[in-house]
Length: 273
Image (cartoon, rainbow, N blue to C red; front, side, top):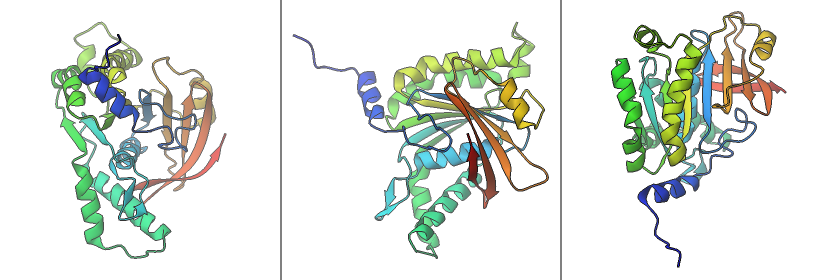
């Protein structure tokens, strides 16, 4: 007779599968999203990498509904490993406040009580675990102990790292790794050994290794993406306009989206496939 008993890991994995992420963000993840996907956000300095990450985390931890109004969040939890110290909790709060305000306006409520916004935001901040790392040893130790964090919280569906390459030069001095791409892939393999077991999406930021702002050149340069990744999101900041560009590559295709940064939130404008 086959046993119906399941381990703690099997239970947690099954519970996470019930948190559907397939339509988490159809604009960005146009081929759908799976619980074990790995996503890279890249771009030059000040292109909006940390801000996009904050937008994604906000949507992850905000509730699906509040007081009968669809907020369209995932109502889940996330872990953020903050290595660059560029990620600011105040920025995340502003993003969530803007999302909530826009949602209320969309149903005809033009003025939202500040207490309502504060209550929603404060209720979900506990769903985000922030780990600040100040050196390579601490960063590696955090990655090696991820399993205990994921095991204790079955609502975690996203692991975010901002940025994954923060200690590249420090590591390069003491190892044989020369390429930043090799360094990042090695870290991804270390992370994936845990996240694949626990059905957790990995999203990380890193600086672009290509200085061009020509999006057509970038499409050519990044024809293929590493087998370990499911999406690469390139952000391009336009210094002559408030309208910026985002190039998204998956194994199945490419999408170009225009976006603006409005009241601390990234808003998609148009798309060209």
